[in-house]
Structure formats: C-alpha cells, structure tokens
Length: 503
Image 1: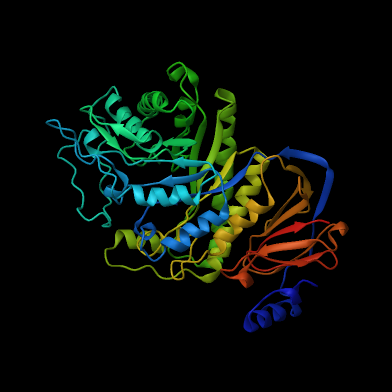
Image 2: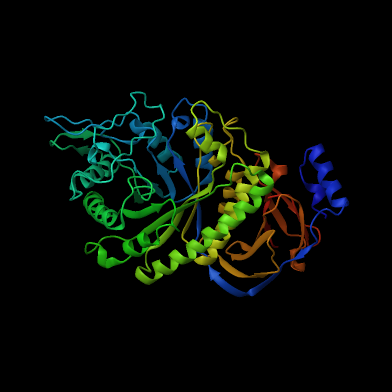
C-alpha cells in the first residue's frame, strides 16, 4: 500500500483508485515466493521489435522524426525491417521484367527510409526482409498492375503461387542483387550493367519471405527449394550473412512446414538453418470490449505458447542448433480489419487501457519465452496508424511519441537479456504472472498484472526497499517511473508491468 501515494496519477485517477482500494474491491493479497538458489533456466532471449515500411516513415511525414528517434533510443538488436506488399514501389526494386537490354531497377522510393532505419539502428544487428518480390516472377493469368503513386495502398500485388522459373534461379538472382546493392556498393543487372548505390551496410540477418502460409501459399517442398536457392546465391555475395526462414502467420495450422523445413535431409548440402521465425497476434471478436479482451488475449496467448512448445520439440529433434525468433507479437483489433475491408471506414480510437493490456501481454510472452530458451522475442510494430493497423503501433499516431507498448519493451530491454538466470518463482495465479531473474546487475522480479483491476501482491521480505520501475496507466505515454518499495506489498495498477530491482 505504501507505493500508492508515490504514483503520478491524475487527480481523478488517484481518487478512483484510492476508493477502489478503500472499498476492498481489489483481489485478496497474493504471496509470491522466490527460491534464489534454485535455477530453472538460463535465458537466451533478447527483446526486439519490427519496423514495417509505410508512408508515415517517409521523410517529411508526421511520424518520421519521432519514430526514428524512438527506434534509436531503444538500442535494440535483431530489429526486423520489412518493406511489404501494400506499397509495391516502396518494397519491390524491379517492378518490370528485364527486356530488350533494359531493366527497371529503381530504389528511389526504397532507399531513403532504409537509410534512416540503418542510421537509427547503427551499432546493432538488423534483419532485412524484402518479402514482396516482383510479381512477374510468378505465373499469373494477366500481368499484375500496381499504382503509380508509391503511397497508395494496394492489397492485391502478391498474386500467383508458382514461379515462372521452377529452378528458382531467377528469383535467387533478384535477392543476390538486392544484398549486393546494400552491402557491395551496387549491383550488376541482368544485362551486365553496373548500378552504383554507394551502400556498404553491415546486414547481420536476412529473412527469406514473410508469412509464407498467406503470401503466395507456399508448400513445404516449394519453399524449401526456394530458400536453398536464395541463400546459396546470397552467400556468394556476402559469405557472412545469416538467414531466417518461414515467418509463419499461423504456426499452429501447418506444423508440417516446420517438420519438413527443419529436417536437413530436405536441403541442399551446406544450406544454412540459422533461424526459424513465426508470429502471433491476439484477435478479439467484434462484439467484445476491453473487459473481455483481457481474458481473450490471455487465452489466445497461452494457446500460442503451447504452439511454441510444440515447435520447439520439432526444432530440437531435427535441427537443435537452429535458433528461434518470434518476430511479430502483438494484437490486432477488429476495428483495424474493418478499415481494411470497408473502404472509407475510419477505425474508432482504441481505449487508453488497451496499450497497457497489449504491453502486459508482450511482457508475459517474453517471460515465458525466456524460460523456454527462445532467442528473440519481437514486438510488432514500431508504426501503425489509421488505415494501417493502428492497434499494432508502438508510437502514438496522434502525437508521434512512444506509447505504453514501446515503454514496456524499453523496460524489458533495460532490465533483462541473454545469460540471465531464471529462478523458481511460485505463488502465482491466473490474474498475474511473475518471474524472478538473477542478472549480472542484480536480482530482479518481473511482475505483470493481466487484469483490468488493481492488485495487491505480497513479495518476499527481502523486497523491502527495492526500487520498482513500472509502466502503467498512470505513466500514460511517458517513460517508465520508479519508486522505492516500503515494506513488501506491491500494489499494481490495471495491466501494469513492473520490475522489482532488489538491493
């Protein structure tokens, strides 16, 4: 209870919270127990995020400066960069097939945003994923058209399910030229002409395609052949490049993809199996409100973590040295989908508490992933806004400042990382989660309120005097706040994420 007076609530929020506590509406105090001598796992997990290209990240756009400043301030590794299908001119570098000695290589609408991304992440590892490849590489009934305006949304570019070159050589050479453009100063086109870029970036990872169960509907056999051809061609350009594969949208629906791809016998000799990747978005139904979302998010998250355990079993059986990146984790509200399916419809604003709910869900996925040995836990995504999945944004699309989802990621990045030892933590219940870590910077306890109500939790006696850093409704879009714990009772706001830093 001592912590209550230290919160930076607005007057109204403070009064409401105090009344709820006084009226006894909070849950009965729970007791967390920690055995610091009983190690249960060693974390390999790095908190990370993805950056999806859209017009708000263009130079001069409203959200450009604040978004890239926030990205730089995170200092994250494994940052995933995805130019994708709604904007063909911002994602595809060769929109027309080579013909009569001429090519259409054009990076005018691609490079400025990528340059700003590489500057913001300088000194940290990045993952590039040019997942939208030229439509002319696929067999289609008619040529695929695209808007002249590079900022016009177009959802029907990724047509076709069969490459026109079944050997995959044509597509592999496209990717080899892309990596050459960004790491070797330019590319040599299909007719032997050199195109100067001046880029000599360090690219640590390249992810081969995105959501292959949705985009072009790859079979395990076809994707594996494609992956082997692409990685072989790209390694000839940059032998140090590492690769990520699959990026499955619905991993629980096609476990055969993991079983086939992770089996080395299905690959060419020497094919790199560095990383597998897959995604999760909580998706409530249209008739639900945030009072139901808290339970829907929790249930769907637990189903996903069950899927992760299953895939980990497959991975460890077939390719134990392959690592895992959960590189799109978030929530998509029904209003976002309504915007995409109903032209002219504008999504209703998200409830303020939603951002804390989504942040709490990500924090819980991180804690469970650390216990399972997952390597990268990537929050999705830096920038969204009305018409472009506003509920996934980590930047407030009205103010261009970071929101609570961003600050939860920053809280985790600053507190935890690979090498931390997870120790036995008990006394939990369905309404909150907690995990104790022994880190190189001391003992820490991650506590997450999964419910839309305050909760009072009794910590071990040694927590008295600990510094508590937290993201909660009271912190709004501001930075995490800190105070000292007097006694050993921790009072959590709805959907709060807190790190208790022991003395």
